[in-house]
Image 1 (cartoon, rainbow, N blue to C red):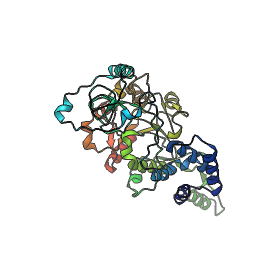
Image 2: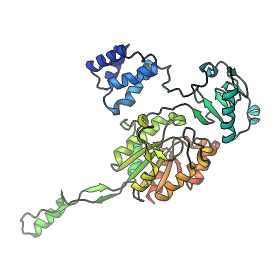
Image 3: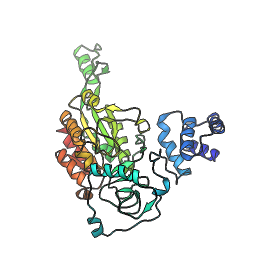
Image 4: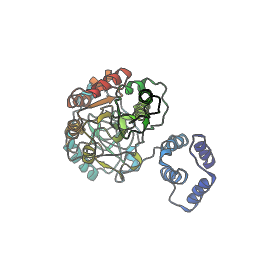
Length: 389
């Protein structure tokens, strides 16, 4: 198995060598704790991958060998695993779903604390306890208008909190585009100006100056022509954005090719106190939003990228973030960004025909003064016009 993994990494362009494979084997022999797929993943990545730019490709290759294993750090140690095994799924009618009303964030958290003290056994298909396949707001694989998903995978995408440490992946900015249309649309935003030291030969001026100088060479120089547009791109990652990874990577690759003065940061669902540039270091290397707001000039073009699918609490409530205890509502942080950078737009990869079914999408459109456009070629054209104003 180790040889197959080694060869697969080489085939995908990751420069692993025989000494690194030997190092991995030695670590496995001496490390008695590497007895799970998750621990083996971190150990093999540490031994075989020497540059962070290869982490994304390593994850893709590793997933091929362990397709049925989800790499997670389990935080629900107080809840036995057999409580959360999906042994029963129910299909509710629209009328049954309509009878379930939202509880609100405070009641959800208070009730969960009570259940953790009271519950002593596994439950499935119910409407009260932590379990699976029912209408309880706690557990997974069931249905509730707003609940706390514990374990399992996202299915209904209605959870207002998720009890797990969620690992996201960086978007691959090196992906080759299938078409140049996206890059051509972004090119409309470029504004060129000649700045810097005059160290570029101005051929036409040199010819005219030499002619006026009776044929004696008179070299004229000029400042190089550069694109003076600054781009700040903030990208939603993880959760429902997994459905749009390919489109977002294409946009990311095109933007990095067209704009040399571009910085990017990641967020999840909505912006809060901090952002990050590497999902592998999301918990250890964070960037204060206040520092970002003060770092870039007001004429910076701000581009949000996200599907706008989230709980309304994540936008309008303090503490409403799905995996972060935010002290201020997401709407407050969004307004700070749009006031600081008046040239902004939100690119939404979700088909526009679905927007009407999402309450959070409508809330963001109102907050952003209807400057949300679909991530299509026509949408990019509209976005470039908005950013140029």
